[in-house]
Length: 288
Image (cartoon, rainbow, N blue to C red):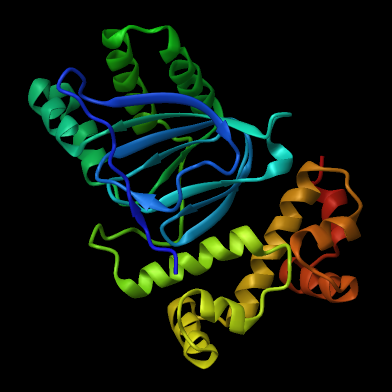
């Protein structure tokens, strides 16, 4: 079973936060992990699925999220979205909770902002015009000296705090406690779905992946998510088809196969049951 990696964020006595911008192979991103540092993550080139605690969603070029302390997360990139060399590009800022404490002591004007991020329990997606401005500042870090980067970080935190264009990610807040073994199992299931949903996944296979028998797994998954595994898997696959219907002009049957549906009539029935309209009607209404 895959467990959560506890990442050691690089630190040194000369800097109060860590910044990196990197180009890497699309499969080389760190696995499902957590760390006490808060993180501002920007996808420069690439797309795929992102897992944050108990939530899976699609991400695209330009996405920026703010991750609270200790919230497990990972980005799983789609090879089709990578560059010719199968690479993706990312930029991150990571800073410890004590950075916010020092910020609040340094200036009364920052106390409310520092308190907000210190108490943050749910990831935030930055959107709209705020996203454009935060992205501009973050990408300029390559041209900044250390003092300018610090000012840039403060500006990003302030913009996101006051903006009405931030959206909470996920279905519930993270309680900040040590991740229980059952939660780790569930998160391992989520990650397995993201990486393998394009092919048939049997109950025996997924149960074995987290070292459980089939009956125990079915009971565990339904108790944890309030729905059977196959229902959850189909809903995830349907969301993948929606992403492709919205963003591409590919044939609908091809999209269904890509998402993991081998039976097109079954796919059409599932889609209409979930969204109330057919895939073709959905594309006509919401597609490019």
